[in-house]
Image (cartoon, rainbow, N blue to C red; front, side, top):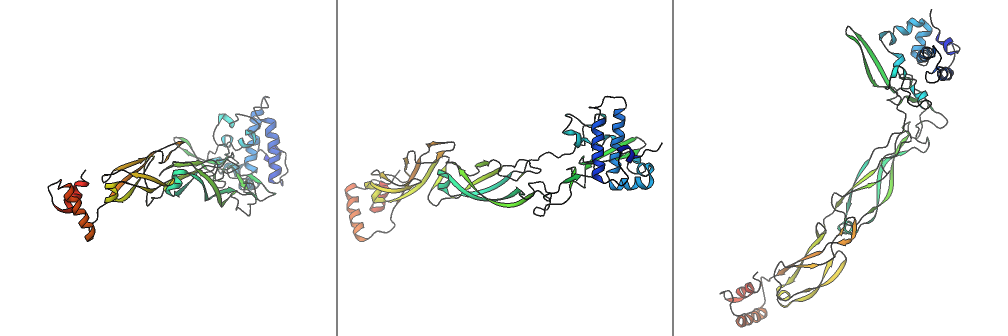
Length: 376
């Protein structure tokens, strides 16, 4: 005997989709095998599901109205499409019956309607040398996706909602079965209509175009810890792209790149610099001010200082990352400038000094005298 799907659901032939959905949900709750243990309930549930699959899809409903059961059996169903294993009804019962996975023990094909975390973002940030040494607050601007405030991230025009996808019945997947002499083979793919969501927005939000998110540029203050270096990565939680369907946002990862300084270099947590003095300052010694990352500081050049001597200023280097109380040292390399030309008065004085000291290297003249003074 031919089955009347309208009669099975208890709706009129001119019933709209919402009336059909309400009738289906009411009967499905009544006859679901997890609720109704009476004989024949499971079979009845399968019939109700079959009726809903036919009448909820405009194309198959039109074929059924015109040709009856034969019209839908010669289509996808006649090619081996297993409606009972679709999982299209799983979305309705998933929140009512825990662990429900579809008829016949099927565990695939559920609609993926849960929140999805947003993507992580990367930002490359340049720092000046002293910013990397001492850290501090830095204001940045990041382009990212934010939840649309108009539709609250749903993508639907305010006052409207979403309906179950008619192509996949809400499962987010479509199955195509092929009969061969060796048996039936099923191919499962993402639903092309809803892109795997299982729902189709009735009216899209005019602000975000139905995406539920908008591209925005946001100002953000981040804290740079003391002692960062090239390649240091900072994680700023929940400042990535907004999630979909009210999912949590991703994280922002800031990669730091330190610009070269004209005066200072860095070796791990030590700071290095050069200071130039005259040969007379090297011979006689002196006190002079040098630049450090902390500011100007006076140092003592001992008499007889040799070229490339390294003086150490303790605790004037880079703070240790994660332990800013511990700092490296500032290493100052002494560069001695020996003149290539001197005036007559300077030559006379140096020659007199050379005679007093004698030619320590067996070379006459000023060149031998200066060479002896700065011999390593």
